[in-house]
Length: 315
Image (cartoon, rainbow, N blue to C red; front, side, top):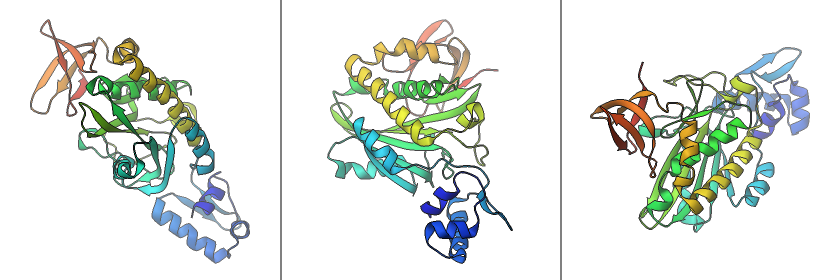
């Protein structure tokens, strides 16, 4: 299937004869493979007599040979899949076999992608970036404090270098013009007070132009600046993330807090924070040294942290 998809990823028409010769199969076998692609990936396919076949939109498929050596230079081993339930879930499953070595899980599609607060992350085939970075962290809470915000900085800066005017929304989202373009999900195993493993899940809307089931405003890199090579995006993100994590581990979140606050799209704005059972309305004034949200409520400063919190802008 991958060989045929790679021939079609340019979005141009290819005749059945041309595809069959390239793959060493019959034209009828090509048609069967195309039907399988449609069934397994959901990718729209056009079939025009006299012209052949083409995808509705060009694709940028991941290439193991292109990614693996570069990622190895950054200190990560690669695990690449066509389709997986969740890259975070797979990373957690792989941890016992990796002996503490950093690794990345990347997929063309997810069938059960996960977001914060139990939400589903819509993950169509071949269009976006779904990846999880797994690493061992020692030093306890000092090393973990603010880590998700640091990852947000790395994602944001990667997008900005592409020309995307991205900003951050506490705690784990990246936005462009009031629309979400990326999200982050951190999951831990082990003892967070001593030695643990952290799985950093990153989802970025890359070349997606339409999607069903997303319950909030969203945008993509393609909508903002045009189609990009997802291989180059992953490599750029990995390099930037490595730089930010190294600084975080060496200097702590305090060294990056001012940069994060300067990039927070709701800094100084009236917002409402929901804890599930209660709501608090006030002005966002920044984040504390642990990455918790600082707000003024009735003239008094309060800090909030936790995985089930949700922040929204007041009308």
